[in-house]
Length: 100
Image (cartoon, rainbow, N blue to C red; front, side, top):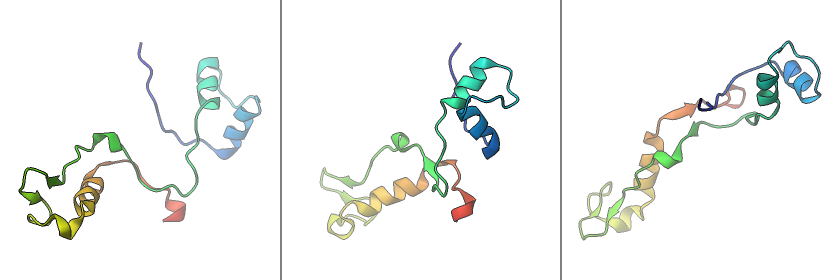
């Protein structure tokens, strides 16, 4: 059976119990260990996106020029093309609302 990666929210108190190897109400040892080995997201993080999904396009080096700047690569210096692609990526995990 394949593993699955999850993002879950648990109370800070339970996280501290688990990190200290204290009982936190979880009887499944495998699940307990998986939570203990998990990576907490930093407080105030921004939107998380899968940047490997970008199919980088931008300036067409075959002479047609920049897609976004209607042919003039000197206008965008590729940044506009790449920024648009990043903004179009779907958000996997929303930003931490405490810091928005």
